[in-house]
Image (cartoon, one colour):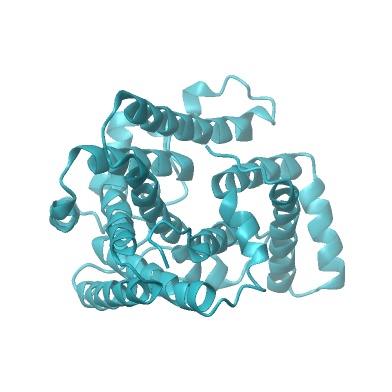
Amino acid sequence: MEKSKRLLSLDILRGITVAGMILVNNGWGESFEMLRHSKWNGMTPCDLVFPFFLFIMGISCYLSLVKSEFKPTPQVVRRIVKRTVLLFVIGLFINWFDHAIEGDFLCFDHLRIWAVMQRIALCYGIVSLFALFCNHRYTIHVIVGILVVYTAILVFGNGYAYDADVNILAQADLKLFGYDHIYHKSPVDPEGLMGTISSVAHVLLGFYCGMLIRQKDTVEKKVIALFVVGTVLVIGGYLLSYGLPINKRIWSPSYVMMTCGLASLLQAFLMYVVDIRQKTKWTTFFHVFGVNALALYVSSELLQIFLKNVGMSEMIYNGIHAVIVPLKWASLVYALYFVLLNFAIGYVLYRKNIYIKL
């Protein structure tokens, strides 16, 4: 297979990830533990979806910018800056919409600054600029350097403390942005500013895998390369977790390595099944999500806020619960219904060949 030929498996992994993000974000009432984020140390399947998205975004950054030969032309730099700002502003808009739909239009004095889209924006912008202005042969060196620095911050700044009063990550957000603009449901904002440090290393690992995908001249070699990287990262993350526990809330170095490793292994598996064996009959559902990933994620966030505030979510859940009595199963069925609702939106775009690029 030629290097330039698009790999369907990349869109499928992106689609699986976005569908998973929508699923775990939209349970109603009491959800299964596997569909909830870990409270602190540890990892559930729910904790895989966002890091998988950042990993595939790193791959996409490489494969996109290689088309311009990584030349930092004014046009390319402007496009990166524009997209970074747009993604960040969309994230702020989602946070604002959550207040505005309740009538609090002027919520700027207590608007949360950080969230998923904002972290995506910063990671995309930083890694894209790295791609243009830095020598790619030092990618691994930069990743290791970032993770070492972040480890030092965690160790010497009580980063693992389940106490916002002493945890450096929580204190940084508090001092820089103020109490009214930060997350209050856990000691540390899971998308806060300092956690972005290790998230950049996360996206750079995806970027490195994108480089491997591009360099290998056959899909078989791409699969082997991703399998090797994934295996090394999973083993390394597991061993590192004995000193630095896996923790999604603080985006710990062990979490970076473990989730990137699992994402790399899954990507290798999908390449084998989809691109080599050509087993594609099952892929349409995830392809719909994959080709309009960010657009469908944003629409799902806005839609769930709207449905919740007009009472539709509760009404639909109560209807499901009347038929399915166990609370956790009712919650799961509601979440699946919401994924299918967003699939229907995406399918209309898919059939019309409309691809919304944020």
